[in-house]
Image (tube, rainbow, N blue to C red; front, side, top):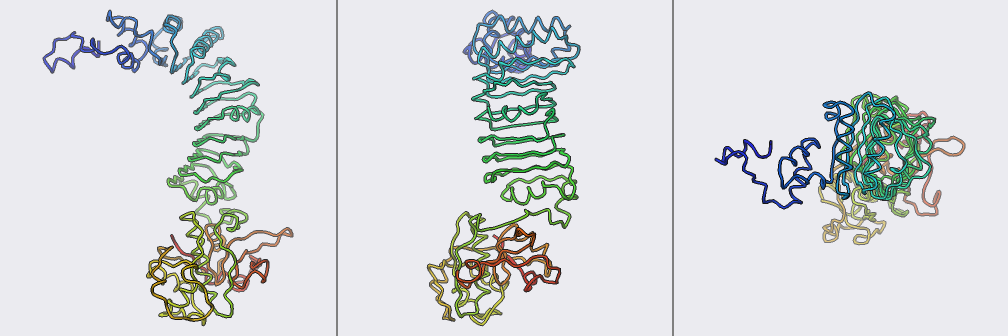
Amino acid sequence: MTMLQSQFDDQNVSVGVDRFIGLPLPLINHIVSFLPVEEMVRTCVLSKRWRNVWSTVPSFHFGHDLYLSKKKCDFFKFVESVLFRRDGLDIQKISLSLGYKTRSGDMHRVNSWIIYALRHNVQVLHISNDDDTSIALSAQIFTCESLREFKLCNEDLKLPTLISLPVLTTLHLSSVAILNGHLHVAFFSACPCLETLILEECKFVNCYTLTISASQLKNLRISGVVPDSVVISTPKLVSIEMIRIRNPSIRFTCELKFISVVNFDTELDQSSELTTLLISAVRNAQSLTLSTLFLQHGLEKENVTAVPSSMDWRKKGAVTPIKDQGQCGSCWAFSTVASMEGITQLSTGKLISLSEQELVDCDVNGEDQGCEGGLMDDAFDFIVQNHGLATEGTYPYKAIDGACDNKKEASHTANITGHEDVPANDEKALLKAVANQPIAVAIDAIGYGTASDGTKYWLVKNSWGTSWGENGYIRMQRDIGTEGGICGIAMMASYPTA
């Protein structure tokens, strides 16, 4: 037998010497569990000491190769001999792969194997059916209190009305047709511990919206044809994969705060909401994989559908309260600082009010001249060279030109790596930029939207106190068709980089 033969010859050990004879039975049990079932049984019966070990092994894989290597009747007898002659211990894992030409009567026998595993507290259940005849799975699967992982392939599935899988963490459906597709919502919701959901080439009969609501779900993979729309409510999602999906409408009903892995290999047109999803919902992803097709039809295009329809960075906690520059012409400093406060919050999670007065007093060697005016790009350069800015509390605003306080200036609470300019006079480019972070435009563009009458607008934070405008903010008309936009808002926009 394989484990007791030629590998010992190199060590001058005679063939047939049982080097495993002294091992504890639990360890022997674990070793033989890695063998195919047929080899495991053969190996065990060749040793007096191992003869009954197979009956205590907790994991069984009755694979497709075993099915094809035997006559069908022999395969069924073998499986039943192995299962029904066990000693009654719990089963950890059972994997069944059925071949072709299985009669409907035989499927009842298959169900009896599954029920046996369920009654012995099976934790992992894999079923693959390559036959045209459906197994008609027992409803007991869907109320199993021990099942932690369930994989089903190539099967027509009719869900029962009663579903309760309290410890299921992994559900993998491949080429499965759910005949009563509307019950999939109850199916997923009945798995309170579900962390991984994989749907490959599945059909949801008479169901036009796939709804995935799972409070603990961390990993989601959907591939192949899906219904017309997908609604996802998964607040703890970490990884999302969308593979070979033909232009669906996908909507998230919760914020994806923990997303880190994104893989989109989809067939899109320019109006697909998946592009919006990519920009707005997964901006913090650490791993991002996009197909060439996605790029060609999505991000490569200069289309406004690649950003959310509205944005308000106040609602995302990236905007400090309204400030007042007074009679000092320091709007350039307030705009610079406001955009830096925004990128600092987005990169660190901390909203910190930073010092405009430091720029007024200390950034005076170039174009910037305190209360006499300045440029945001020069201010960004100063911040980089100075290795950061102090907080407003450390270096408070006085609304006058003053001498640079080097001690306060040395207090670097927040920093940036550089800055970028938005293409001049391009409101579409500005829209995409504001979708990613607050932008300096001499005042601070913190969002955009569309009024109830259909008028598009920019949402702008000013620095003239809360009594001005709408509590210190103003909505300026967007897309008016003139170069630079209203009041030249798109002429010299720039933003800091973290």
